[in-house]
Length: 317
Image (tube, rainbow, N blue to C red; front, side, top):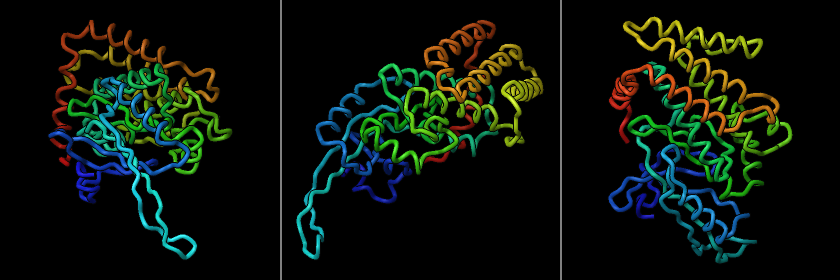
């Protein structure tokens, strides 16, 4: 594939459960190309139909699919001691290029610049993107910080959301079971391989907890119950915000902190039937944001410092 210089090693951006990602250029536009590991259960027609569906999806909090490749190449292969001609299928997705890397890397390397407004912006953006996917409906089934990318304005974009459709549910289950990130999988999947929207809700709860606690010095604290977790995280952020000179929105932000940690806890309920829907979560966050922003003169000003510092420190690729 010319746009990636034939998948040259120096163009490689990373790899995941279902393929390897390369940087490329298409019509003077930087893109990311995900070379999929071939899974035979999906035929060419079904693959094309699913890609056409995914290409029509547009939301600021999901990574845009801009094109795809599905080619068959005849190659020489050895079979039972003889050289035979075999067909080799190559499939790839051409995706919007998102410059600031993934959320997992950001949380591990740049957490020192996290302020509350940036945390809330990321949590709300992920939630809105996931609601959009569930409305399609698409279940992500591998939602984790490494699959959430950040653009130059620190807007989160969910990636890899259509993979379950492109490889089939059975293959998704087989692949996630040995390779997936256990900490982001709900108990009903680990025990009985049950797949539903509630799978993603659980993963979202874990991500929110990660965002809220990554700045804490001791992230390994064991909580005996949900209420203790809520109070501890809320207390930490309240002290952190109180320690900022000239901080004017303590009450508003503390309320947002409490709401986010409460949402995270209920998202992680062991019973999937008790987990909230994405519609409810987004409504709760929107209502909270509107109410609290009315008390602030310019809420975006709180984000500018953190975003500019991160963009200055982010590695260029």
